Length: 357
Image (cartoon, rainbow, N blue to C red; front, side):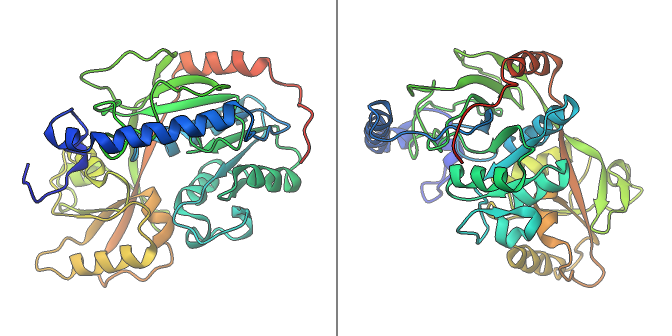
């Protein structure tokens, strides 16, 4: 690794010299989190319990591991089983500072890209807010028919009591097992909270060196959708770019791990003519500017592929002349073992709890 290059993913894979140099910060974070856990355990702070069951979909590793596709698949499964789920999310990248219902203004600049994407994918009511209990209360007041809450990326938001946590891991697993910035972990793993929700592990990618977790594990691999969709909804088989029917495309991604998206496209047989990686939750202006700059280069491709998360921000935005933009979704099917376990778990929670909104 170049000594002038900060490559956290490389550092976090092992307990090498760069990670060891950051170990004192890991130790400090460990102590701060222990103090935080003690405050909740001793009752100095208390979580709020919703009047309906709460399932959190989150992770302990930093960066995209597949939480949003897992959340969408979970909500869709609940709907097929007769539940009426509602979703709450932080709304990263959005301007909202108080609880906001996505249906009131489905602007990714206000509500964040992932909540808008979840609302479109599931049709479920979605509320965003930094205060998760307040977001749940706002959602239930507007949608009293909701009988279960799914919290997207809420594992570290302890103010909302959770009944079940689906903790998502990709191929990185827990990396070197250390806390940020020496490692990829947001909090110690396994979870050390008391009280703690039921915990299940969901693996969205296989890993070459899995570490045993003291929780039930389920494999739910992600895959690219077979069809890419233009911003007006017109479909096109992804294989058209792989087999040469269409010229090699460019790829644009403003997500936590853009290279993972590019590699997934290449795994479909595509020779990408150009790639453009942006920061996670890049806004519409950043995406538009990056696309315009890339499209202005000599020999730039006409077709560009992006993620669904980027596409929700680029609908209605002027594209460079001659450029066609296509979104490629990530599909995730919950395995039968997970849905069976979930159905059994839910069967014990049909009766609403007493709680004050």
